[in-house]
Amino acid sequence: MFAFDNSYARLPERFFQPVYPAPVAKPQLIRFNVALATELGLSPEVTDAARLAAIFSGNAVPTGAEPLAMAYSGHQFGQFNPQLGDGRAILLGEVVDANGQRRDIQLKGAGETPFSRRGDGRAALGPVLREYIVSEAMSALGIPTTRALAAVLTGEPVYRETVQPGAVFTRVAASHVRVGTFQFFAARGDTDGVKALADHVIARHYPEIAGEHDPYLALLSAIAGRQAALIARWLSVGFIHGVMNTDNMTVSGETIDFGPCAFLDEYDPQKVFSSIDQRGRYAYGNQPGIGQWNIARLAEALLPLFAGNEEENVSAANAALVEFGRVFQESWLDAFRRKLGIEGEAEGDLALVNDFLQLMHRGEADFTLTFRALGRVAGGAADLMLEAQFTDATGVGDWLSRWRARLADSATSPAGRQATMAAVNPALIPRNHRIEQAIQAGLSGDFQPFERLAMALERPYEDDPQFADLATPPRREERVTKTFCGT
Ligand code: AMP
Ligand code: MG
Image (cartoon, rainbow, N blue to C red; front, side, top):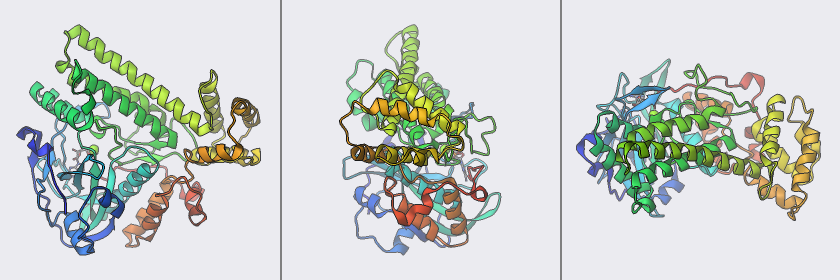
């Protein structure tokens, strides 16, 4: 089924532990992502649900797979943990997709590995459904992310705060190399390991820098740039990752590990959902600063490979961190200019964006609906359409005058602007309460809400009347105030 070519398995032995998935009692397919399977070039002969369930539960390991658990470390909430690794995930192998991109196929929840700490190596149904919904939604929103290939019930219970049905999630990623993977070798003083990993990552994700004078410094800058751009995209859709530990940050620039993640309903830059993030380290508005902090940890790991003397290397690493800030700021402003329908660049743009966000914060305006409504106003709808999003709309009229003045010298028609704004301001995001409802139904054996939500989120920029209920914010009693890792 898979034309495996496993480059990670060819790295030195200390990079991973070979381990086979532990078979499950009664695999049952919940969902298989046919579009993604096609993109991956998986041979289409397998359409039988029972066969797919056997493969994506780990019961039938496909030919050519070299299952392994990757070693990594990581800073978790600022504390360094030298020994993490795939404790409930097993990499089956890699395939080269239809676009020539190498992709990892990984089973999450496939049983114990040598890196399982305390845990059982299994995954509960709730987190599996959440990751499926959110990762596919992020992809449809156009944000770099790991993908969901399959979700399968194991037929076995897992014991968390409550007993839940067990499930296995198949994740597809450009790679699973994390900032924490570099830290694993750096923490052991294993500079050869850091170098072998850096060479692997350059070949795999940044082939264009291979010939540079100082490729490892160029690697740091390239990773920093992709992460900065990624986090700007998160903020542009109101995404809160929730657990931006260095082991949950890829070096490919894809979003990974959808644990206690959530989306803003009303705009609040300090918003936190994760039950374990008591100090708000990973609050919505802190994400760029944390991204930069994580890249600083990557810089420390890579530093011994840089070409200069120590002083030069430290100053080069600092320059890369400054560059992270610049790329973030530029990407963020670019994204928010688009959200306002602004073309080109003008002096007051930053203030225009910030003032709008401030009004939204004060007026408890729904992040998604407000930008969508602004697009309608651009197309000729009454200002009231927008003002209705604010509990306190004082100042919104004045702001709209400034915004119109900024748009005035553009030749774009109102309808044209509405269309371009609708292409960047989604109508649908995976609202926390809808995810929760889909999970609750799934836990009682009804996967219809999950199916429907997944289907609706394939086209997040369209106003589809049949999914209108999924676009609205929660009623008071539907609100999700806390999210959980559920590991
Ligand atoms: P995460 O919070 O998912 O990023 O995981 C942090 C660490 O805990 C990683 O090393 C995981 O592999 C490990 N871990 C998480 N869940 C489990 C589990 N159910 N069994 C064993 N190890 C786990
Ligand atoms: Mg993780």
